[in-house]
Length: 482
View (cartoon, rainbow, N blue to C red):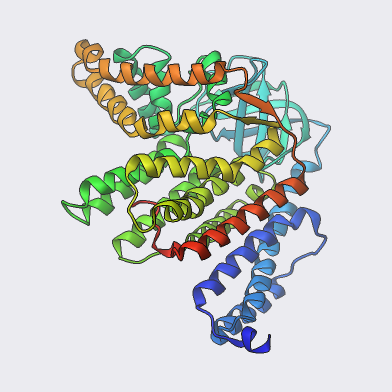
């Protein structure tokens, strides 16, 4: 045992352990009473230097401990800042803030608004606010609003919530969120050539604009396990980056890196910096950079590194933000489980687009299933089938939707002709979603406790380790953008 622990280890794994410690340290802050001190940061720095200098297996424990200290310190600061909001729970408050994401419509037709950059009186307030109102609000992402109502406790990544709030005022800064204006104008041009609900579905693929979907189609997408493809999702961004890189790599490696990098920035600007998009942008960007430099990231290292960055910036993500959790689970499935399944069945043979999509879809569904079941108590039994029927065609749907929008600018009177192939393809996807959701067995109720979730992921990890041993596959060779 002593000799095993004293063996040298690559510093990459120490870095991975450090990142894991940071994530865990932030996550346990609400359950811990430890008041972090800047002195502990100095101690953690000494621990990091010592572990990296020694680079032995036992120093992995030291690296994790150092990460725990850093994460706990950052999380404690954020929790203290959020306590200012918590002290007002139960009181009527008037708060100004910026609309962080596109307003949504809830189950009871209420408008849901998420606010950040909060100001109460003249005092800035940390965190985000969940606001619902029964009044029509003519505002969009980036606008500033003043709301009034009784403050309730927050949930997930929200410091507080105000239900049935009164909208005191709404103003649009100049120039405001330029990307939203461009997106909305482009959406109008797409609708010149494609009818509803196909136009909204195509825009959901291309720019994550989901609100215009009719209720019946939105519900069908949920039952069929397809909601992830019509929101600002990391998968859509991955599709853009992967296909653009493959298209341009034979022309120029520089172009095959620069243009996808520009797409990452543009896509995030248009869709907004949600938890899933912040993670997807970092993962895709780092994978693209690694490909350009001829280097590789181990997927475990990459995911934990990105997780550590996001929780250091927004500690609330680790305190119950389901979108953040699902995004990492899905990408763990795509980057770890999918290549191992392919290697197990096909060896070193490079996967084609259809087979790659199939394995990635199955793997993402498996990786996210425990979280989805625990959160919603339901599971889609048709999700894999419907995803396989639709996902391989998404790149073409995105391309055709983009071409239709451009035609709306250049030849608006011909937009319907140019948009005909787009309408046919999107119409097929609408029918697949609706027919999948119509099956009486499409969705089943399943209940899973936190113990069940942990056990499920332990089984998955054991299966991953077994496939890794059986195939000898080197996960380091897998790259998200290839």
